[in-house]
Structures are given as C-alpha cells and as structure tokens.
Image (cartoon, rainbow, N blue to C red; front, side):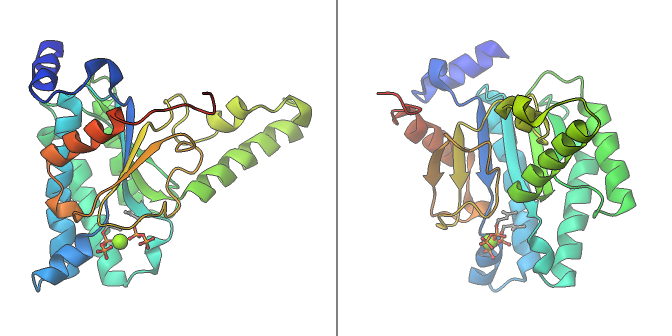
Length: 248
Ligand code: IPE
Ligand code: IPE
Ligand code: MG
C-alpha cells in the first residue's frame, strides 16, 4: 500500500512529505451540471455520487488520512421535498453499498452532523456502516450529512454547559480543546486543504472550526466533472502555498 502511494506520488511530482492530512470537500454544482445537459437535478446528484467514489479512492491511494465531504447541509432541507427525498435515497444507497464498493479501498466511513432529524432507517444504516468499517486501516471518510458548522458548535457548547451544570468543569477551566472534543470530528486533525467546486467561493456553513487555517482551493469545474487528476492538481496547488499559521 505504502509502495503504491509512493510510486503514484512520484509519477505525479507530489511531495510525499507535504501531503494534506485532512481534505474537506464542498461538492457543489450537481444541479448546474444536470441543467447544462437538459436533465433533472437528480441526474446531477447521481453523477455526483459516482464522482465521489473515484475521489475517495484516489485520496486513499495518495495516502491522505481523512476526507470530509459535504453531502447535505442543515440548510438543504429548504429544497423541494422531491429533491431532498432523492438525496436521502442516494445517501442511503451510498451507505449500503459502501461496504462493497469501498471494501477494497479499506475506507472507514463515518457520518458527521445531527442525526435526530434523519429517518430512523437512515440512522440505523449509519450505525451499521460505521460499525462494519471501523476497523479498516485506510482513509477515514466523514460524510457530512445534515451537517452545519454552527449546529456543530452549538452541540459542543451544550455539552460543555452540561459539564458545568454537573460540576465536572468550571467555566474558567474551559479550553479550545474542550470545544474541539464536542465536535463531530473530535480526535481528528484540522482540515489542511478545503476544496470547493462549481466556482462558488463561500463556506456555506462547512466546518467553521476545523477550517481555521485550511488552504482554500476553489475550482470552476462542477462536481460531477471533478476527476482524480483534478484532486491531484488541488494538492499540487496546496503544496505550492506557504502556510505560516500566524508566524513568519
Ligand atoms: C451540490 O450540488 C449537492 C448538494 C448541495 C446536495 P447542488 O445541488 O448544490 O448543485 P447546484 O449548486 O444547484 O448547481
Ligand atoms: C453546500 O452547497 C452544501 C453541500 C455541498 C452539501 P449549497 O449548494 O447548498 O450551498 P449554497 O446554497 O450555494 O451556499
Ligand atoms: Mg449548490
């Protein structure tokens, strides 16, 4: 596996010592991709799901440790019910098939976001997929599903308030680490590289805490057109950036 990653990186001139540990992806532009072809938006989402499989596989082959993909935001409930239902069905299929399709890739799958608004069937499937893939050794894939950065911070704040109320902590003792431990990504590294497709340049409530020092790369391609070679190009751009974290 390591050898494979090494060989592939060599081929593409990527600096193995400077790979992003954690990549965040705002997969945007499915609707516009479909519209351009005179197809229903659902066709764009379907094509987007295919794109996702290839990108996760490539990231894993490149030795990236974590990838978080924005699949459904807390704001996406505003869409027409038929589109929401379609997206939920697609995500359900993705979770069910992930066991088979991503088995060879050794991907560990987790869902991040608020679960209580999801159907019971979806909640059960998330648990099942997480359990089935938890001992794998490859990339960790966080599927942001009913995820919102503000909701996540609110969730963390509530947990801390509980701890204070129960006398386990005093407000003075609270640190950044405590907030982090209440996030859905607790224990995972911050996002190093954030990619958004479709030309939009905004966060749309994605990982507000974790992207504090991420390098952002905005790509004009629509998500279904985003190919493994585009991921490599984004990593190359990332590697060309000087990260200072406030230093000099
Ligand atoms: C991203 O594509 C997928 C989700 C938000 C679920 P969009 O559906 O936002 O596509 P556009 O932005 O309308 O083209
Ligand atoms: C962000 O895309 C959410 C996902 C990719 C799941 P949107 O298409 O919903 O974001 P806005 O509305 O353009 O900000
Ligand atoms: Mg969009």
